[in-house]
Every structure is written in structure tokens, then in C-alpha cells.
Length: 238
Length: 238
DNA sequence: CGACTGTATATTGTCGACAATTTTTTTGTG
DNA sequence: CACAAAAAAATTGTCGACAATATACAGTCG
Image (cartoon, each protein chain N blue to C red):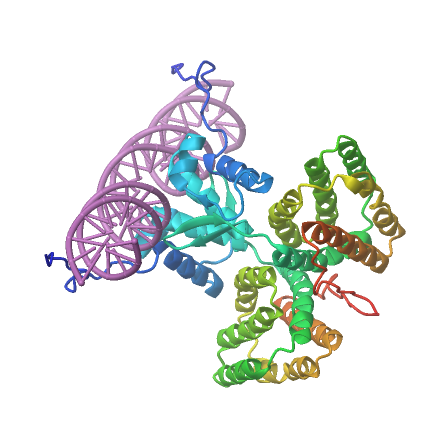
């Protein structure tokens, strides 16, 4: 009868994790890397991070393994993990892959007749963030914009891949600490994309995406160092 | 002086890991999944696998995390890991991504003037395996063939991504347990690709790659179930 | 003074145990 | 017999400790 069970101790029973420490560690370390708090090349000491998070090493190890797979971290077997370098060459590689992936996803999304409502909301958020001069927030909304398109492609694999690319894409923006110049124009630059999606012409949408991405990476590389884009000029149509 | 140190006990000191258990576990589990020994949907019990490998759970956990990132395994927070389903829809997604990626890498490789010597060796190996009727071995050499092209693109990210896609690509072939019919023809089908690469015309190479991949996935889906390719028809040129 | 060697330290790799949670089985009841 | 609640079992999540390895440092000899 009426067994004395206290399904939830209300007093002092705070830390009962409803979520996994490993997930938290993953998010936190990822953020540290993206923001640049853990600079490129710096080592990730498991014990140190564990202490900082107030956990054991196990969740930290797990988080690090995931970040390795995300490409944010490099690891040598007994040496440890370091934040992977993201130089101009890596950015070109990154954007080449992005180009290939996103020209595909936007075609699929366009063919499926995706609505642009949410996209317009995100553009508005970009604008808002731009007016505050918050470069990083603009970049995050911009990433959401592209993720939204990816989502509507229906290609689950592409969605996963784009998510895992997100960290590096944000890193690339964060590297470029200057660049408050044309922040106001970034929202408007998305109009042609919206129009193309609404037109239902997938080929046109892909071409707009190509131009959009090329412009983005061009700016990025131009600011990072004068390096012109090496082999990124990659037209899909004649 | 001359401290008694035995840097390598020759007798019975076998398990001194020169390599990490976690790596071994990763390879072994991956192979179990690809071959189909761990069928789709089956659960991966950490303790069970650990016992089978003669290790603790830690390396197994690590391996599982990596396989999750490779997309071979699905994981719900407290429920455990299961082998991810790979149905016709997933295969279409996979090959769409592959198409986007490989039409890019072959263009870059071609522009860089890659040698086809190694590729011809791999075609020979395919033929050899085909004559033995070893479907899986043909598939592995075929994967190496494409990996080789990817390698010569110089795009590090694309190389990583293709490697992580490899597991799923092999799984797709393994699913299709029949299919000894046109095994002999598979080697010859690579000739146009080789010719295009040697011609130095990157656009032509990309088109050949597109045809090649479309043909592959077409066969695959046709055998898997009568499902016609849904939205994969994805020409790059007009 | 520099190269080498051996030691000390720091860090990762693995283990066994316990806590938290979920799934399965059992039990009681209408 | 079906159905709900409770107990039991199985499994994952986290921890602290130890072993294996790599790095840093000091001492020695040329």
C-alpha cells in the first residue's frame, strides 16, 4: 500500500541531469572554438576541460571525439587534441564542398516548392542583427537561412552534413574579426535567392546560390588576406 | 646502470597495445555492420561488444560515437544505439550527395592533371575480383577507385567526407546480395572516366562521372526493389 | 657548448564500479 | 482475462583510479 516513494526530491536534488553531460560539453567546447576562445592550434586538455565543466573526463572525451568528426579538432593518437587550423586553403576547400552541396539542396527544395516565409523571417533577423553591428549573430542567422533550405530539400544526409559543416563555417566568419563594413547589405543580398526559389525554377535557384556563395567566400578571403580565390571558380552551367 | 628494462617482452606479452583498442573496435564494428553481421535495426549493446572484443566498455563507446558520426548508427539518449536503416530513400539521398561531391572532385582532379596509372591498377583489381565472383571485393576496389580521384582533388574536406560516406556506400552494395550478373562488366564501365580524366577536360569528366554514378545507383535501386529513381535525375549541364 | 640519456612529469588510454534511466517482468485487481 | 502498478532486470551515463605513452627537463659525457 501507498509505498513511500518520492519520485522527485525537491530539496537539493538539483543536479539530476535530464540531459547528458556529454552533450553539454560538446556544445560548450564547440562554442569555445567557434568564438575563438580556444584559438587555432591550441591543445584541448581533457582534465582541464573536465574540471572547468565540473564533470569527469568521460563526457569530455566523448565531446572531443564528436568534434573531431565535425572537423573542428585534430587528434594524434597519444598526443592529444588540438584545434584544427582553418587557413585560406581550408576555407576554399570548405566553400567548394558547400557549393556542391547547396546547389543540390536548393534545387531539390525549389522543386518541392518550399515556402519562403521562414526564410524571410530569417532575413529580417539578419537585418536586425546587422543594425546592432553584431557580426556573429548575422552569421548565425545566415547559417540558419541556409540550413532551412537544406531542411526542405528532404535529403537527410545533406542535412546532417550541413549541420556538421556549420561549426567550420562559423569559425571562418569569426576569424574575420573586422568586417563591419557591408554588414547592412548582407540581408538584401538574399533577395535574388528568394525570388528564384519562388519562381520554381530549380536551375535558376542553383545559379543564384552559386553566385551567392562565391560572393561570400570572395569577401571572406579578400579580407582574410589578399589571396584571390584559387580554384573555386566553379560554374555549373556553361 | 643498465636498468633492467625489457622494452618488448617477447613471450606472452602480446596485448601491449601499439594501437588503440578504440580504433580496433571501430574497425571491427564497422565491418560487422557493413557485412550485415549486425543487421539493420539491431541494437548495439556496449557490454556485449566489449566482452566480445575482450575490452572494457570505454573503447566500445568511443567507437560507437564515431560510427554515429559516420551515419552508420543511430542513437537515442538513454535508449542505446541501433544500426541505421538504409532503405531506398536513404540510398537516393546518399547518391545525390555523392553525385554533388564527386562531380566536384573529379573536376578538380582533372584540372590538376592527375595520372590514371593507379586508377588502371584498381580497375584491374576489380576485374580480378569480378572473375572470382566476389561482389564485395569488387565494391571495395571500386570505392578505392573513387577515393583515389577524390584524393587527387586536393580538397581535404572532400576527402574526409568521402571516407565517412564509404561505410554507407559499402552497406548499400552489401544489401544487394544477389547481383552476380553484370559483375564482369563493371570494370569496363570505368573506361570513359579514365579517358575523360586523361583528356584534361574537367567538364567532360564531370559528365562522365554523373553518368557513371547514375548508372550505379540505377542498377542498385532496380535490384533492391522495382522503385524507379525518384528525384535523382540531376543533370549538371543543360 | 652541444648531443645524448635517463628520469620526472603530464597527458592520454583503459578499466571496473556505481548511479540514473529505461525496458521487461511480475504482481495485484476489477 | 485484460489492465494498471510495482518490482526487477538490463542498459546507458558518469566517475575515480590506474596503466601506457609521450613530452619536458636535468644531468652526463664527448
